[in-house]
Structure formats: structure tokens, C-alpha cells
Image (cartoon, rainbow, N blue to C red; front, side, top):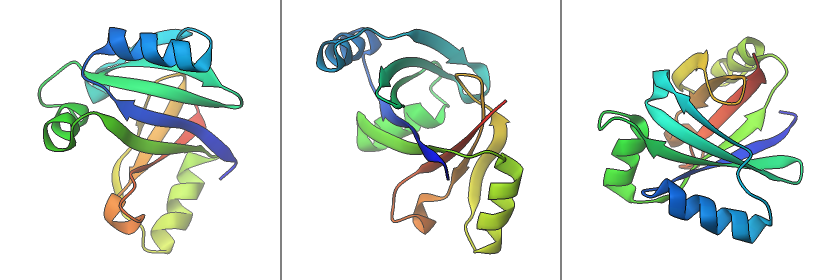
Length: 131
């Protein structure tokens, strides 16, 4: 793990959340991007060396829609940058961690995978590598 890449936050109203985080962080979102494979629209903010990713579902079947239905808006995941996603997944699987999705194409030019939160202190962990 090289660094915290971003914090993912599930939101119900993207425009309102963008306004709030733009005000709090002192700069607007630098990019909106739809990730078709995840059925989600993302909005990114730079926060020092890390980012904040706002997520809103584009389909009622998406993981973010299910998250909002069960838990409401708020923290969804922590994402860590890795140099080699396949190698890191192999290492973590060898330690007994379960992968719940990925590797797949994610937002912001990344390949991603998620670890099962039951194995990671109830926190959904995303691993990101440059595509």
C-alpha cells in the first residue's frame, strides 16, 4: 500500500454534496465521471495528496444504491493506491482476505478491487492501481 488514494462518500444529492465539499475544501470538483460497470456517477475533489470521491447511483441495482438504502449517505469506502493490483490481491488472498469485486475498471483512470468488509474491521477497502 503506497498511500491513501481517496475516501469514497455515498450521497443522495450530488449537486448539494459538491457545493458542500467545494466550500469545505476550498476548491470545486475537478471531474465528474460515470462508471458504467459500477452504475455510479462520481465527482472528485483534490485534498492534499489524497482525494474525496462523491458517489451517486445511476441504477437502483448498483452497490451504491443498496448502500444508501441500507445505511444512508456517508462514508462508503477507503481506497489505497497500490503499484500492482494483481500482485497485491494475491498477497492479501494468501493472508485470507476475500475479494468482493474486481479487478475491474474504475473511475479516474484506475483499475480497482474491493476487499470484504467482514475481513477489514467492517470498513470497505478499495485497492486502486493506475490503468
